[in-house]
Length: 68
Image (cartoon, rainbow, N blue to C red):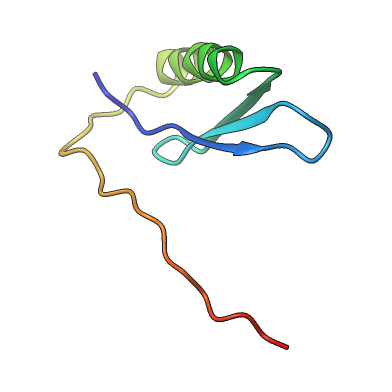
């Protein structure tokens, strides 16, 4: 099963990882650690709250106009 992982750099260092399908979040000092921690969190979540998944979501970015 594939789920989405969104990673962003944390202000205090390391990475924050987020899974939008379940609303689960985690963190880690490296990308690999953040993903491993998120994987564990999502697996634990799905044990308690089973879900079915359809097609993989489209994930992209968009640019916003800067305000002066």
